[in-house]
Length: 327
Ligand code: GRE
Ligand code: ZN
Image 1 (cartoon, rainbow, N blue to C red):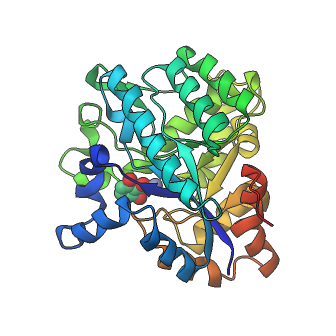
Image 2 (image 1 turned 90 degrees about the horizontal axis):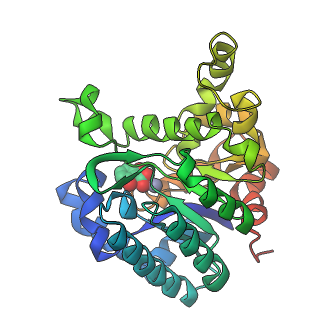
């Protein structure tokens, strides 16, 4: 299929390069990976052409700004990364868009940076790499906490999507992964970490206060669609500490937008489609952690969707969500 739109597509700047290299790829492919993630021009566009991806929204790699302990440094590096992405996408406005990296260490500064990016640089929203650390390496701060309510008010006011992207659990809080480093990252731990964060947002009453928020989640929903029925079934018996006014599934189905990033697989695709409906599911690749070729080969040929739905999920849903100026 030509004309696909993808929006979990990553770049790095030199300051954030080291963070993901070791668990993103092996030493043999490291040089190629470095080139791919730094490239915001011809190489990337060439693969997009080859795989039928017309438009990609770029974001900073994980954990990015969220792993910086010093708040001032986080604010400065987010600005620098966003200016870099803005420059790159301005050279190809018909092919590339941008998500803001945000210094969540300071909720007011994060809101202000998002406003700058959306209003002055035409960014399409934000992509944040899970919880933020702040001051101490063993800190992990989640965005359902009261200190983020004003931040969310600003996101609602700007009316742009917020992509909640995985990051790895910090070792101090991951005793149960000990001796199994493979288990902590993309194979499983990313989804555990990100799904808990997404469910915390749902259970905090956030969506009662801000009923227009739109949250994007990748990897076909970080396993939540598969578990959603059981969450609500069990909560009828023991809703301890749950602060939403409605069942959790209502919030997830209303506020969450799910992409195929890194999960090119029919059983999971069918489950997500059945739980959320075709209006809330979107194509994405997760380049360069995944190959655009693999993403497109699967998506273009899957018999899970009709040709009409392939176009909707691969393209028109994203045009609507981001109000893109594409046909
Ligand atoms: C991702 O961005 O989703 C990602 C990483 C690192 C390894 C695998 C992966 O940041 O999917
Ligand atoms: Zn990703």
